[in-house]
Amino acid sequence: MNNLNLRYQLEDKPSFWRNILFGLQWLAIAMPMIIIVGKIVATLQFEDPSQQIIYIQKVFFVIGLSILIQVIWGHKLPLVIGPASVLLVGITASQGAGINTIYSSILIGGLILTLISISGLFEHLKKLFTPRVVVTILMLISFTLIPMIINLLFANSAVISPLTNLLFALAFVFSLFLANKFLTGIWKSTLIIWGMVLGSIIYALLFPEGIASVSASTGFISGFFTDFNTRIFPLEIGTLISFLICFIALAINDLGSIQAIGGMLNVDNMPKRISKGITLTGVLNIISGFFAVIGPVNYSMSPGVIASTSVASRYPLIPAGIALVILAFFPPALNLIAVIPSVVIGSTFIYTLCSQLAAGLMLAFNSMKDFRLEYGLIIGLPLMLSILISFLPEAVVISFPTWLRPILGNGFVVGVLAVLVMEHIIYKKLKS
Image (cartoon, rainbow, N blue to C red; front, side):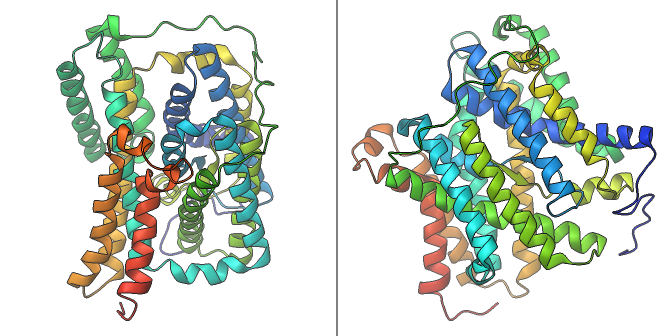
């Protein structure tokens, strides 16, 4: 299988205890992005720490459910799943729209993705996503999240000086890259979670006044069965359009992740696996909209994990998914997430998004043998526009018509529209 020396193939079933052990590895790999994105959105939307914990509970539940459904009934591949960063872009840019409007848009976006996948229309839409468009979208996600990262790095500036937080963030980010260079195997695959643990401990020792107190929530369920999204209408057309464009990027991400692992393992029935996988991603985003949490997507990190562990079996992801669902009903364990300093979350997100940028650059240079000036323009203008829009003063955005704010005030949306215009209208006749 592509010269891979695997201990366990896709359909091999490890012994019970080995399955649990491999499952814990997948759990350690899945948790960092759940924690990072879950805490970011929870902090954006709720001031009450108990409400933040309930939100993170629901994210754990939805992601655990997503892993189980995809591995057992969906694409049936060893793919780790997590919250979609591109939906984080949409949520961040739509804070003025209200929670019901945001999650109704995610629910409808999931429904439309499901219908497009079932109907076969996705095969035709794929023609729009040339390598230059995909490269640009991958890079847009990272650039348009910069304002949010800045807010995370300096969230507690009233307690700790901005310069102190900046110096800590720089030291922490470079430490992560240094560790990435020397670590191998499962240690490298789980670097983010160990980095967050050590970073939080060091920050707490250096700046104890900058650490939030742990919530007093007890019990196994807390307020999990509250705050469901039962009011789908009225919708804001601008917010809906913004999220539909985000779902274009989500679909590209999903497709690329499934194709990457399928190609690596040389599995059969790939068209059917892709169709099932993307359809269920749509369904799971409908469920996320109902739960009023950020939706899931298949991540592209799995090939690296399989290469380092030599385990390609899909079955260890089942105990990993079950563990996430169990954690969702155990608030005392999730309370520990609340004490992770925002500067550690922001720094870790910088490290994570750099990997996304690197993936975009690799695709750019590997997919275009003769990289022409025009290709750089197709990619460059959308990036410039997205950064410009992302840093517009709030007073400028507020001056836009209400229905236009989620579109023209969202750097990612403007960037995606710009790259589609550049690729398919202005430079339509260029060939790779």
